[in-house]
Amino acid sequence: MTADLFETVADVRPSFEVIAVGAALLRGFAGPLESELMTALRDVVAQAPFRRMVTPGGHQMSVAMTNCGSAGWITDRTGYRYGADDPETGKPWPAMPALLRDLAGRAADHAGFAGFSPDVCLVNRYVPGARMSLHQDRDELDFGAPIVSVSLGLPAIFLWGGLKRSDKPRRFRLEHGDVAVWGGPARLNFHGVAPLADGEHPLMGRQRINLTFRKVR
Ligand code: MD6
Ligand code: FE
Image (cartoon, rainbow, N blue to C red; front, side, top):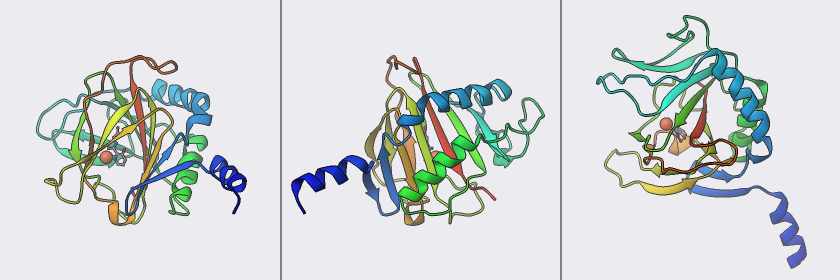
């Protein structure tokens, strides 16, 4: 293969960084869609505003959340679960825009998980100082489907642990437009987000938005 051909191929393939068996970072994958994503999100948030939920232990989360799709992830004093209606409005969660579903499907496909069709998009909003402690995503019925996670706005340090809570997490910087995909043997790895550093993103301002797409039923 000539150097020229190699460079051409490298240029057209999105960067792909394997962080574990079953887990990959697609750097900049969502970048080209940034303005359409923001429009779609504004519409979702107008129907189902961000709110800071309470954990079963009684702590208010620093991250504000909302959802779109046929169900949404919620937490309150009684536990974590998926529900069809937004408890704040009593109405169904807003439908998942096709743009979002397609983006998640294409990202999963790139990472080797063909045919991913999410039914839930959990939207997380971080302001400086907000964080997410190490957790596993295990409220879904089917661990056969991967999770696709899209980062927008301020950069964050993603904490990537192992299958045991005590496994020391590695740190990865997630920037605007980056997409993480994981499933298979990595589906139940512990992960979290370090306290968000202050800053100002040119498009999104003083916040980070993370979209995680799941198949929950
Ligand atoms: C976040 N993400 O990046 C939090 N979970 O704001 C998650 O908790 C997460 O990014 C499962 C899969 C991908 C994720
Ligand atoms: Fe998670």
